[in-house]
Length: 384
Image (cartoon, rainbow, N blue to C red; front, side, top):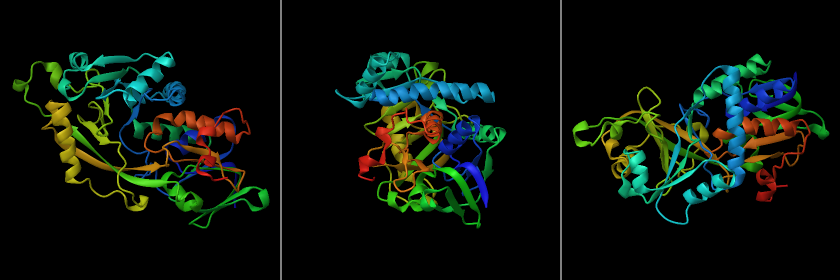
């Protein structure tokens, strides 16, 4: 039997951020994950994730502002550059739209944002075909968040702060007998007794807590890394063939679902699609990327970024989303175990908020109810 103040199930980005925050506050923390770390199946794992202020609601804009402050603090503490600022460009075709709502929400919060017609976008970023869209919204705070590095630094910081990390051991049961301490049971026969627990096990949460099975859906999301290969003779200027972070932004075109990054990984840029993929078992989601996805990427490039139409595929990945019905997160207490906090359901857009979520979870664990989590409560799903 092993004792802790707080045990956290899941050592992805949310579990690691929560562990760091709790340990900084003096808690004795155990962080446990079913895999070696970082878990290659986890939603946290890839070379990069998008950071942006651009959300259509002030709620998430404010949360992103808080998260960026905390990411910068982590950079200072770890000595690692976790974000590369590129700006983010949202490509719009109609009005009203998600893109214009993002512009309004950022402006309401007093943040810099620009609304440009397609010709002005193409003048600033000549890689884009101005005929493919009507306008663009520029979020200057957009950045590449170096995901694998960020997770690794958080895990190392947790270790330095005294967090006990247990890997390759699966938690198969959680209970709180008669309202007392929480007990976790692993597939290795270990029993962990703690004052409180945080369940941050991503898409595996619905197996550990079956009452959430109908409210969490795991989807398979394909992505690819392309090395730009262009013919300079066909282009007007060197700027049209530069896809480096100082010349080319993160881009989002949500009519098609495609979003992408400038070159940031071994000479390659990334493209993925945010539209929800097929529902899968998280243990069997990571098979190969289909040729149809690669073809759809090339079709997108041909329309929006012609110089990439013949880019060379150099890496493909399948990642997973852990989705709620409304794409808002779940941060709430277990309906039958008042010492168990649920932190899950990040729906493919949560990574950027990780240090802010870790802070929120740590505040809730401390017993402080000053943070309003109404938007993330289970009651919106009629779970009480």
